[in-house]
Length: 226
Image (cartoon, rainbow, N blue to C red; front, side, top):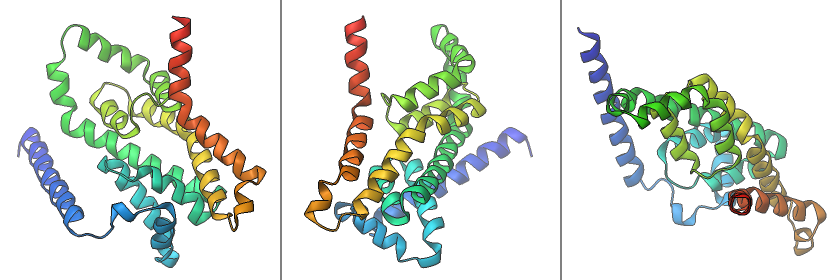
């Protein structure tokens, strides 16, 4: 069988499976997203006992691929369910598996189509991205001007090398992973109203606000320097 035909058949089969999987997830009512909180997600994941860790990592990776909520809730769940250190490790593992998978899906299914469509400035930009892929991805991971999951798929469509994408993503999401796990772990330590005003929790809140405000801070600085 011709390699091109075989590749197209594989794409069709995977596409059908993906649509079927999405349909099942929407209609199975396995999780009520409207009632999903870090605490309820923690209780659900911990209910798997010894399988809680792989279940969390797989859930996070699949959530990254799916482009639907609640990725932020799952990020906080890591520290809440597993503690600050191990939570950060499991969160990083799930994030890297998910981001790697989205890149590969995008590259496999649509890169050839995009490549054939690129002309002029678009093609030149694509070539520049292949040369400056690492620094470009690192910047957008640290300063999240582009939604996390959207950037994953967009990189797969570009000529950026997977090696540059993966390494820049790993380094760029470290601050966010640490802060999310630290904040989630701090939530689990609240036993009374007094704990809310403890120095540790106030620091966690401050760091979380800072991470979320980075795009705004960047825009303000850039506006003043232009």
